[in-house]
Length: 221
Image (cartoon, rainbow, N blue to C red):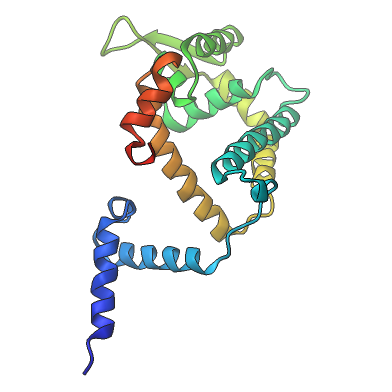
């Protein structure tokens, strides 16, 4: 009996343990199978073409451009979803959706949940308070903090617009199949987990790029 196949499996298992995905998928067989599937799939699929590739345009440049484009597309659909409603910006209903989904939270927790700077976030919260869509109370844990809670008026206002918001959300995912959506979630979640700790450090613009390059991308210098 030959052991070439067994040696190949052992070699794959060693490669899996050294891969970044090992911590995500875990040491079990299910994670190992997923890694093999995605690795083989990536090897089988030809590298996509993008405009400017023959002139040296990098994959990173294309990814950045496409993310910017998708964000702008999503904003146009969001504007349509709140047209002729009480909402003036998409951030207003996103704040309410987060409160409905995750429950009461402090002002800063709510702002950070939406990845916004403090000044912009405070302006949104002030508008929500003015409209009576949220209310604030002193935090039981920290008297200096204010906990923001969704009011019945805010919930009703949100519910009145939810069908259009769901339609806009569905349109953004376009013609992706269910497996493609699942794969996109995995990739975007991986990027989010990379960027969120950096964002949480609240680094100045002056030091941001150098710090990230040295601390988070040591292998790319």
